[in-house]
Amino acid sequence: MNVSLRAPARLSCIALALVLAGCATAPSSPVTINIVAINDFHGNLEPSRYVPVNAEGGKEKAIRAGGIEAVAAALQAWRKEDKDLIFVSAGDLVGASPAMSSLWADEPTIEAMNMLDLRVSAVGNHEFDAGRKELLRQQHGGCDSPRPAKACQMAKDYRGAKFTYLAGNVIDSATGKPFIPAYRIETVKGIKVGLVGVVLQDTRSVVMASGIAGLSFEDEAQAINRAIPQMRKDGADVIVALVHQGGTTRDHPLQAGCSNLEGPIVDVVKKLDPAVRLVISGHTHQGYLCTVDGRTVTQGASYGHLATRVAMTVQKGAGVPAGIKVENVLMQAGDYPADEKMVAFVSKVKESSRAALMRPVARLAAAPVLRKQNEAGEAPLGNLIADAVLAATRNVGARIGFMNEGGIRKDLEAGENNVAAFGQAQAVLPFGNTLVVMDLTGAQIRRILENQWKEGSSGGSMLQVSKGFSYRWNETKPVGSRVLGMALDGQPIEDAKTYRVVANNFLAEGGDNFPDFAKGTNRLETGLLDLDAFTDYLRASEGQGASLAPEAARIIKVQ
Image (cartoon, rainbow, N blue to C red; front, top):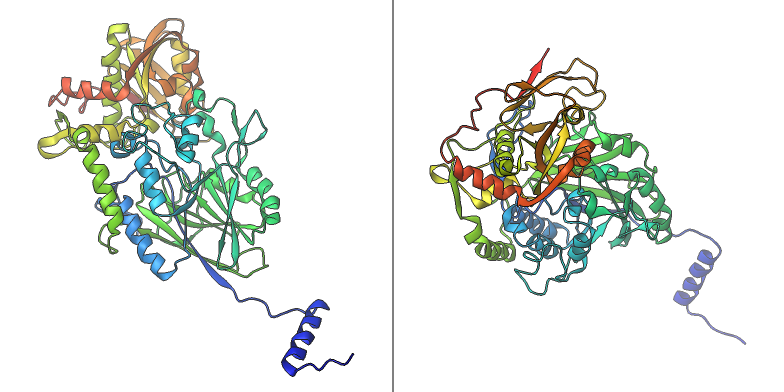
């Protein structure tokens, strides 16, 4: 049979034959994938205090920055440049949140992130603050919550996060698999971007043990590497790791290319598969744009103060980015045109919260009361809180009060005439912890204090202590023998003697690597909130200022 082919058809057939014969077609052009990341937002819907760093590394005057409206405005502007921009988080979106979010079980923050089309967030340790059940409720919606007085109180039909929480290294002992997804793949401009998330392996030491029963926390890098083959099988062209673990550096937070990053994130990055060229980190509330083993490692401070912009050049089929450019951008009101929908949303939440937030608590002798510690490890605000929990439990025999520094989230600020409102007090102690009274021997108290320091460290995670109790320590001594002496009301603490102490239930379960608290005997679960003890104490000592200027140092560093 004779068939006449017109030239165009004949050329098409020739081209098809060449392809079928294995002749390569021209490669697709590289594309730019734009990513914006935040970390450690902690429900800070409103702007908060931020201290910028100048070019010489010195601190400048504190400003107000961050908050959801500033982030929303920036995203709105940047999406006009690239509608396909991906918005992601490296964890701790919620937890330890100011009252405007925590009053409502952090549902306003989840909804705000939905409005901003957040795609994924690595789980942070604070997502476990109210336990695994509440984390799953925040993801999937519903009102069955361990916080019934807060959940579904702003909206009766809470529907959960539209974004996906990721936790590749959090394993459910019942199944042997991650209890929520390890990764998600986003298709952008024809490129499949694999986003894999993990939380710090040491999460168990910084959350309530009862809230994570049945879960184990594995090595971060191993979990990421384990997920990569399946991500490739699902078509991922490029891999981005979201790691809720971080580090510190002396480099400027806005300067790309730092080479002085230190801390746990460095070890994680060095163990990663070569396919991972971009690591977006969190947890340490630092700003940095660093390079570790040829990989880009970023963090955007906290509370929305900085947003990290990433531009990845990706060639289809290459497997890794051809280039990565990063910058940290300060989030301040007015730098970009407002996102009116977000402005209206925040206004609605603020109005719903106003009565509780603005309720006066007490007039302070001076404000703000700072959580910053002196060289010995003692802070004015730490003193105040330790005194407050002791005062609240003296009637059940407590003689020493302890407070963990990580539980003090912000300085205590005040308004006109130095009057602190409930919202300002709640921002200091946002966890809703309760107080536990127990018996500890002097030897156990000594071991607790020794656990403040780790091998190779001169500083430590310093406990704040109540008035009447004091101790001396020497940083030149080996870890485990730095405490030289302890005293209570002027009398030496005896190793064999028993003392009644009070701490929040997080510490009482051995949190923050203080296991001896969990060994306390004759335990009394008071049910009293640390925040209530704090506000009651502020009222009782209104204007006195006694705890703001202690009569004597409680923590004494000697040489």
